[in-house]
Length: 493
Ligand code: UTP
Image 1 (spheres, rainbow, N blue to C red):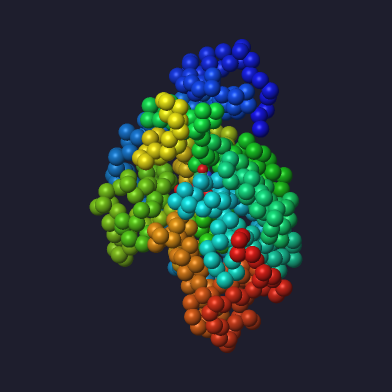
Image 2 (image 1 turned 180 degrees about the horizontal axis):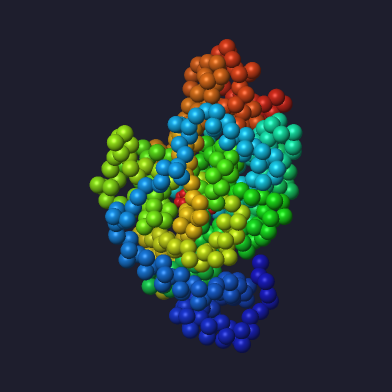
């Protein structure tokens, strides 16, 4: 639907002049062929572009391409020990103290969750937002539902501990393509039992796609090719969409930001919150130990004394293989897109540092309208998308900390279709089964067979299961639910 009736000649001339000034006048190449409606659509797209900024972004982003092959080995140091907590080597009582501290923050309405759900999920090849994906657990729960139920359960645990009914604000970052279906899905599912007042969806920004010379591509003769500006677009969106103000109104001090596609994410993890609160950290990252030197994950480390994520391609094999005396890798802290920020830190980023965020270039196959006016689906990369990354703010932290979590308890990403054999629905299911079996066994129960799922409404992270499972033998498929929980979830979810 178009926003105006007609574009006048004067408006057209002004638009053309402006585009010419920035070398983007080719966007009007098919103007004569367009209907009045299509002209309006194209005008709207063009008016939304800040051409000066868009050209500057291209220049900045591509200048960093020259540095792509530079190795950072000589400048790198691992995270300092006093800023590193390893969950598996920390005393249980200490972890319980962090847990309680985190639950107290939740009870006081101080904790929010930022779900990064604006990605295009191209590798998974699912036609809907990734959060709607059902990996095929006995419950048929989607990623969104699992995360919602973890939030619900935490609110209950915080209430049990403190007697206070604190609520977790859930901010869901979507993009042009994921906003509408996400909204509809939450409405249709009654917000999974959460209060709609506590769920705020907002759209991240987008950037145009370019050819290799910096010319903006047309996706249709009347439509500019655009893509979300990366998960690091969250800082700008939090500021511009009023989310920082909403956090201030609610008194939210800590924001747990995580990706949508890790089925094991401990949403609003009270241990993470409690530890960061105790450390007075303003910015934090959860990491997992790298599984082997060549695992293609970025590592959290210091470069010239500042924290950042160094991609696998930025270090030599020699550095990737370096070991400590205990045999562990020196650069071991695998980044998993799971962070905690204070609201003050986010304000500081929004007001001062957002414009300095690194612009990353991804060479992609971008559908486009060619010289002859034909829409093409290229078979090899024909242009670039520019993305900002959520982790590029570590360098601005005053007190950065890292929490190493056990991979089998907290990290299983859904990136690919099953045919890839890794980071797919089958591995996500298997990882849930393994972890939930471990919880049942730790509470004195036995599971026969493989399929085993515990509802988040019954237990957030394996707690309070003894009364339900001790001394009991369960046969697969096991699906333990909370009292009164409905098992009838449509498998179309
Ligand atoms: P990925 O980089 O893995 O991208 O995102 P993706 O969209 O899920 O999948 P591919 O690469 O297209 O196959 C990591 C997290 O960041 C979010 C994603 O939704 C996911 O939770 N993200 C990514 C955004 O929120 N916005 C973006 O622009 C990009």
